[in-house]
Image 1 (cartoon, rainbow, N blue to C red):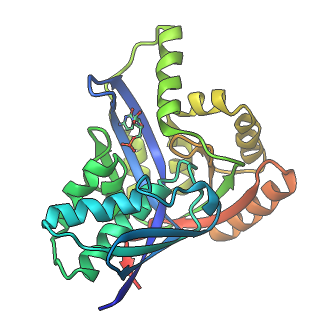
Image 2 (image 1 turned 180 degrees about the vertical axis):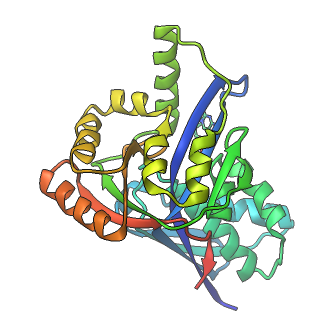
Image 3 (image 1 turned 90 degrees about the vertical axis):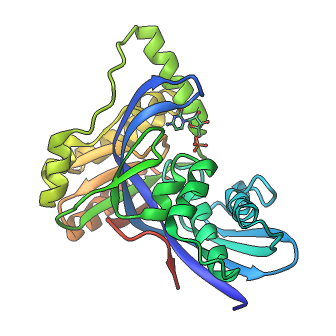
Length: 300
Ligand code: C5P
């Protein structure tokens, strides 16, 4: 086999409860991940060295050296296998870069799956999960897909039953936000207010709404502890979120560490209408519709 292509989805967080800052610089979380139908594609081709090229949505903002998370994933996999494999990766991006939708993590997960196949390693998903957790907190979920609760720093996953398909509208912003800076701002704001930091817990009504496939109930339970920090760092998001509420979204929140905003609709038709109104309101660089949950990385 000379070349393998893997399609991998973006995610939105339905609940992101941020606990206290740990000694290792991470926060204990309850992170309800939900994979949605915005896909990057990663093609791995056998080569002697390691190289990467990025095409598509905001490709110029993604590094094409060893900082690239997909290349780091390929290197980590080769190290795990104890061999000096080579690969050329071509990443075709549709997931917004530094947008709070785990695009980098998705590309890393796709690279693990693609190289495992290309190099004929046949490693089980448990091994890939371990490598994934070292690459980043969101990479294990990017390997899993569907809907799942993440605890620890988000890497310990329990898949969830979901009773239907949810329809989403995403408002893409100009430029990204650094995840580390948003967490740091969250800490700063909490310290300034002296707010007591509760141990994070998954919200039972949110899990029940997911099981029932009830968009209205899910919409009112969406919650993201990073949202105030993301809005503080990017003030224009307040207006984007407000526009979604005004236009009838059943739920509104910043996706992960932002700056992408996510709006839940009641149906596919409602998502289409909502997307048109948000486009007309001029509160985003681009507006796209998607549905979830969708499966994790798939070889195409
Ligand atoms: O794990 P990852 O490299 O994706 O995390 C990026 C940054 O997000 C970390 O360096 C840290 O600042 C922050 N983070 C955190 N707590 C988590 C996950 C991420 O503080 N549970």
